[in-house]
Length: 111
Image 1 (cartoon, rainbow, N blue to C red):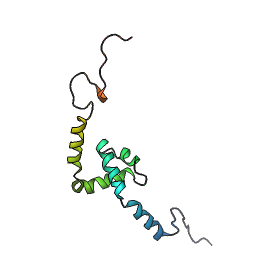
Image 2 (image 1 turned 135 degrees about the vertical axis):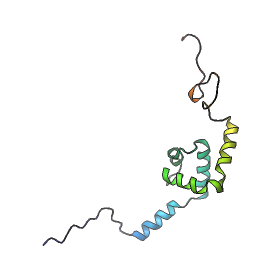
Image 3 (image 1 turned 180 degrees about the vertical axis):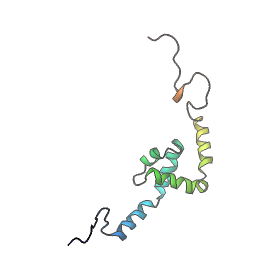
């Protein structure tokens, strides 16, 4: 006699333990916060590059953290200061003989 289909896909053996582990991964440690800020200053809003330096954080986690904490961490001011120290972003909005990526344009005949 057929009683129906019983799926075991996505079965979690201990849901309480799984939720506890998920919450511990979601909490940001001080070192993760510092790493996030450093990587954000070098790669603003490039969530994949930022998340690459954080072991348990996804790009989505980084974006969520940014949008929920950007005012408290004053990230926009920090980014402006960081870019001023670096001379802005190389190759963006500059005039002169520099092309994309800050590379100097070649002049003259090729050797």
